[in-house]
Length: 342
Image (cartoon, rainbow, N blue to C red; front, side, top):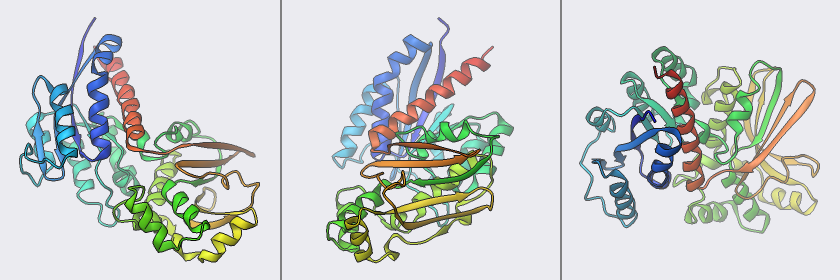
């Protein structure tokens, strides 16, 4: 069997990056046996630096993930530039799992642009680059023949990206969704009597919300996902084109009263594809609305197309599921590489 050798780097060693490292270590032999692909992780970038890996990378990366979780950072080489490892290791592919940065886009955009300039393909769970500069990044990737996989950016555990790209060229009227599971949890606590402040604090404490919960409660996260969906459907927008209304703008007693009457408040992302208007805001949904029962760690998507409606619901994270979706993108990348190999 012809062996395709692929070197990769992992940029971001938080929960998703560590889970991804375990997935790659566990499935490397399967890739070799079933696809004729020898994959090896050349290095890892964390928040305080990076580490290059050797031939026994599977054992090394599992050890590093365990040490990192215990607070050990002593194995990292200090560096303020995540692309330094890319220069050192020269990977074919980089997995990107770094925190979002929607206000400035940095350092995320610099990382994406740097990877593309160096000819490195990308599989990402971070929404920043595509939410802000989808068209720019994909145009450059096409010019250089580079793969970008981004299934993990929207409804990670559910194939929303596959569904929306499968509709390109058809008459999509409207995209409407519950795209942020954290706000489901916050609203459920408010329904039970907690204040918004108490509910948000609990979500942060339980690591269901971002360390900066405004990413969820001010609509940045669902807006980023909506921007990616709309671009994937063929309409060029940025997160900057989406009007955001804070989750906490709705009175707490209204959330509780809606629940008592059988209705539900949900944080709804809407793209009116005909009028080219895009928004994220809290809405009171009637019981018959298919999105009204999307709760817990689930997301929901409703697509109006050609007089019909497509409904998709399924799980979002957590980290292990997001890592698994990034592995799905890896399979797509490898299939593409093998088709192009002489």
